[in-house]
Structures are given as structure tokens and as C-alpha cells.
Amino acid sequence: MRATLDLRAALFHLLMVFILGLLTTPPAQAQTCRTNTDCDDGVFCNGAEACGSGRCQTGLFVDCDDRKACTLDSCAEGARTCTHTAPDADGDGHGASTCLSEARVPLGDDCDDADPHRFPGNTEVCDPGHDEDCNPDTLGGLDADRDGFVSAACGN
Image 1: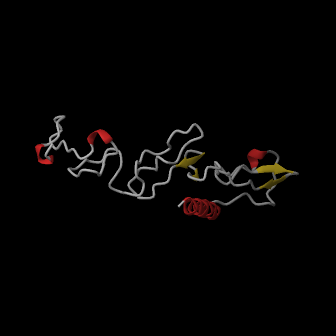
Image 2: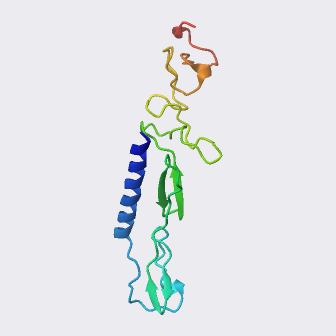
């Protein structure tokens, strides 16, 4: 599973680099300049262009790899920064809580990233043994009218 995520992250990074390369036009190598500002194309993710020997030189793409195997790394042009997110294998909008920061803090909040019906905030239903909302205190209990008590329909 980890190798698949590593491969996906690497392929995503390469695809983003390719797309950004197509969408941006780096300064022409022959463009003359006096300062680095003369060469700046205003695009963050393709790196900082520089003036060298009176000619503009293209920059190196921003390296967003945080060297963590579990994160999906990308360059966010609008925010002008790199992002590192936990993968969401089940597509429920919540990243895997098994992906940890350097401080061992979960980067995601999904208690089961293989089950799209288990994530924080999901409605708990009357089914013993399946925790839909990632809260063990409400396992198998449904508060249909939100009065703070488990509904009688659950047999509790």
C-alpha cells in the first residue's frame, strides 16, 4: 500500500510539473536584463528566474517533496507555497490519520481510510460494530432527534 501511495505521489508531482511547464512561459534565454526583477515571470511554482551575465535564466521548479512517504506534496500557485496532505484513499474527504507529522501528530482525521462510510462527523447508525463517525463513544448508537439520547429504535 505504501509503495502505491509513493508511486501515486511521485506521478502526481511529475504531472503537476509538466502541466505548470505548459501553462507558464519562462523568460526567453536571450532576453537581456540588468536585475533579477527584469526576468521574473510572476509564477512561483516554476522557480525564481535570475539575471546572469546580462541574460535571463529560467529558475528551477520548486521542490515540494517533504521526504515523507505518506504525504501528497504539491505546489500551490495561488498561495505561493508547498502543500503536504494526508492521502484520502477512500475518497470521503478526510485524510488518513495514519499519516503522521514529524511530531507524530496525525495529518488527517479519518479513522479508517479504506472505508468511505467511516469519517469524523458522519452520522452514526444502529449497527453494532461499525463506527461511522470515528467516535467510539457513539458506536452503534443513533441520536436521530439530536436530544442527547440514543434513539429507542437502536434497542439500547
